[in-house]
Each structure stands twice: as C-alpha cells, then as structure tokens.
Image 1 (cartoon, helix red, strand yellow):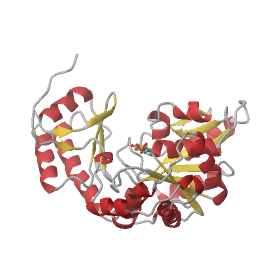
Image 2 (cartoon, protein in one colour; image 1 turned 180 degrees about the vertical axis):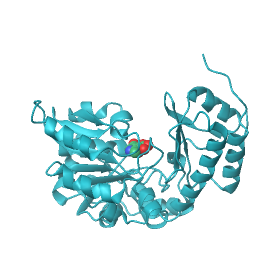
Image 3 (cartoon, protein in one colour; image 1 turned 90 degrees about the horizontal axis):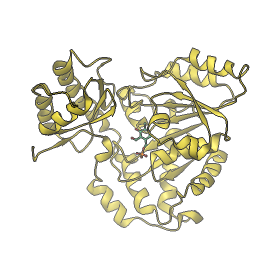
Image 4 (cartoon, protein in one colour; image 1 turned 180 degrees about the horizontal axis):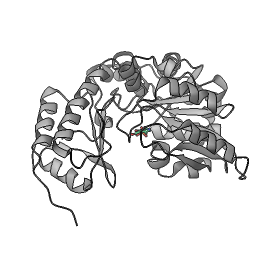
Length: 345
Ligand SMILES: Cc1ncc(COP(=O)(O)O)c(C=O)c1O
C-alpha cells in the first residue's frame, strides 16, 4: 500500500483555505435563529444576488437544502418528477419519502438530463391516475453522468414546459456549470423557482449549502429548516468561509475541469474496452461504467489512488482544489499502468 494517496473520491474532501480559516476566526456572529448573525445574513444576501433570486437560506448540508426545498414546495402524498439517478432520488437516504411524504415519478436521466416529452407524459398521466405532480427536480451539474451540464436552451424549454409546477434545481455544483459554460449562475437558474448550491464541495468551504428563491419561499423554507432541526446559532464562523468560497474560489474551478480531462484520457486508454457510456467530462467528474467496480477501487487504492464506486457498475473520479499537477500526473500514470486485477467473489 502506498503512503502517498491521491484522493479522487469527491470534491467534498477539500479543506478550508488559509483565507477561510482567517475569516472564520474573525467572523462577526450572533444568534442566527433571531436573524442576528450578520455574517450569515451577508452570505445569504451574496448568494441570492449571485443567483438572481430575492432571498436565500444557509443550511448545514446539500441534502438538507434539497429536503427543505422539497418540503417547502410539496404536500405529502404528491409526486415529484426527477431523474432516476439524481441525488434527491438515489443518494438522500430515501429522505424525501420520510421528510416530505412524497413519491418520485422517475425519468430517464442517464445522459444527465431527461426528455421533456417524458416530463409531458408525466404531466398528462395526472389526468388518468389519481396523483398530483407537485414539483420537478433537476440536477445541474448532474453528478452520476460525469458532471454534465443542462443545455441552456433545453433548460429554457423545461421552465416553459413545467407551467405552474415549481422547478427546483439541485445545483450542488452550479458554479462548475457556470465556469465551464461561460453562462452566469443567475442565467442558469433563471427558470428555476428554487436553486441550491454547496459551498462545501469544489468551492472549498468546510460546511454548508445555500438555498435561494422568492422571499416568501425562503421564509417558508426557514421554517422547514427548523422542523428538520437545521437551525444554527453563531453560524457566522461557517458562513464566513462560505463568503470567501463564493467571492474567491469560483474561477479556479476551470483548473479542476482541465484536470478531469487528463484523467478521462487515462481512463479511456486503460479501460477503453470495458468503460462504456464514456465521454470527455464537461466539468470536474469522470464517471464510467465498469463491470468490477469494487475490485477496481481496491486496485486503484493499492496503486495510490482513492476513488469510489457510485453504483454496482459505475465508477467516479473527482478533481478538486486540493490536488496539484504532481497528483494528477501520479494518478494519470497509476490509471494507465494499472495491472489487471482479479474478480472479487
Ligand atoms: C448533486 C448533489 N446534490 C446534493 C448533494 C448533497 O450535499 P451534502 O453532501 O452537502 O449533503 C451532493 C453531494 O455529494 C451532490 O453531489
């Protein structure tokens, strides 16, 4: 086993920068439940302005931000249309059923987006079955497909097509989408009624996510955050890092995207014959199908590279700010030269 490990498990492994730690130490704080934490208020205003919404709310995690959004938009027993691989469906512990009492109407998002005709079919199904579609959720960038970006024209058509049904955008990596496409986050989120972003991923803050929408929606979401126990007190110590993340860490995401392309080329060379459904990454995630993901993960670990499967046949490598050129060169070589490995029983 190598002592030196290149950690490609997730962009959540990033540690706060020195500037973040300084800002955290110096943050002005107060009791946020009374609206008295000036740093949290500043972070919420900054995010709301960036994404072009009236108001925003700081939450402990992306999962909680999505769950609060779903609770706020829906009523128990109603249906939420979403891609079957999306985080809200596949990676939130079944939380939407428990926290909001909703059911999912699953759409095929294997290429990162879903067909608007499929959504129209879901909408018209309402006429024949006794169900009501209360929300449409999308993920942008879409993690399981390898950080793919919703095409802007398609997003605009989606916003038209949902009509009066609210649209929630899980933009955990919204800034990756913006940097890679050159389109502002406000424009990307313009058709969404609510949008959430994690500052704890590629942007490098230690904790936290933001949810934005209309002032009324955020007032209701603030209440729902409380229902889930997510209210925080002198949270300015965390919000301060979020402000540094949003103000200084966005442009550098381009570097992560370039590095993902390097790793994708290595994957294509080494696993060309087994990696299916594989494309050059648009952002910071290399995702590919492999028949033996557990054995592959172990083999990579022995070669000094940490990477996780995200499904029984799906592998993921994620680039982030705590990697340097030497790490990428090391991982590139390790992948290209990975010896054949046995099948796990
Ligand atoms: C697309 C997406 N949404 C939501 C989340 C949840 O974020 P958190 O880990 O902060 O709860 C993640 C985390 O990996 C994610 O990839």
